[in-house]
Length: 285
Ligand SMILES: [Zn+2]
Image: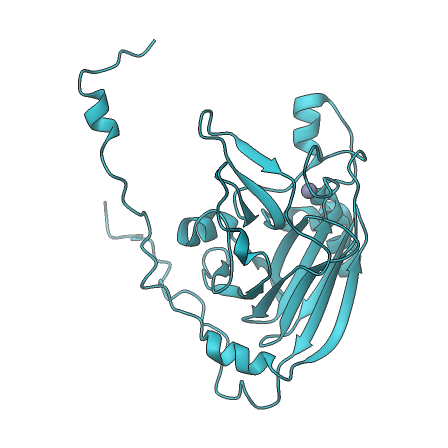
């Protein structure tokens, strides 16, 4: 039992401060990206089957678009540096920098020690959604990915088509390695099209039916050579349950576009983070 202090209300009334004011974040040149997108050429597509995942490559300076086709469907996105898989998307730090949900102009940041933009959102047809009265919004970086371990923990289930497993199989296929070798590279995702938040009363992670409809898309600019993995979540639109074959599921389309000729001549991929990695070693404490 905790004892409520007399000044409890005063303590609760202290105003919050933003942990990481992001006005000093290097801003993307969205006007340049828009110019590069005008007259861009579609150079490839990957159809991700329902309850499965596929990998795709996106060269630096190219665009990739994830589109809902056939019916409402949520996608779990992983990104890696195409030539160094240990550099991958860092969902937690992206959340700390941009907030719980991403939209146009915001970026997917990479893991330590790199901590640089991997991909910048240039177009979001669900940008109109905002934050609903439940505190829900779309494209979150708060969920992890559905996985068989949590299902086993909570319900003793053995389901093989969770996003974690789908991404593991897709990466294993792409690299030509075993699932055991690929699995450690699978990481917390960007939940594309998923509508989520935290309940006000218990602070629990919630989901609700995604507002996505066929034709809606989220489009990114690749800041360096990327390998992507996208799973069409077994939760479908995530209106009821995931980690099972119950929900209606649909494919997702990934398309890659080459930028307009010449526009990006003066552009170059962002440098890795400038911190020297000495961590104060040898300086005493
Ligand atoms: Zn999932």
